[in-house]
Image 1 (cartoon, one colour):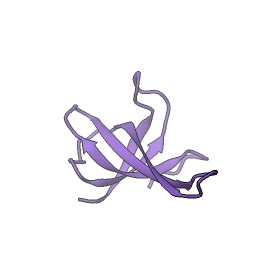
Image 2 (tube, rainbow, N blue to C red):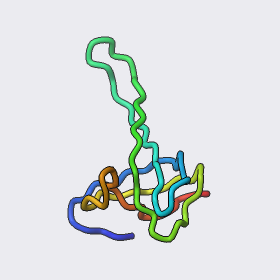
Image 3 (cartoon, rainbow, N blue to C red):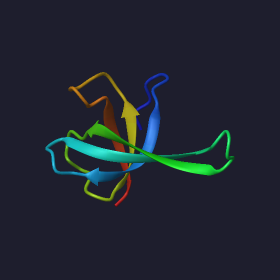
Image 4 (cartoon, rainbow, N blue to C red):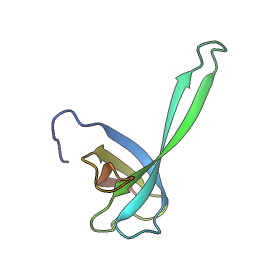
Length: 83
């Protein structure tokens, strides 16, 4: 794995693989609501750079924060955890 200082690493599922060298990764996080004390699930989509087009739709992947590569891409695909 690539380790570069204090960059954020997230795990998510590839939800779109239509673009060349770009994957949309959905990352789910849970937190407890402050007033209702109910567990809330939130999903966020990140555009990640996949240089070799190794990931496919539905793959579980790790993404890492990087410099801006385009208007929306600020993450790079590190590894495919499972197909």
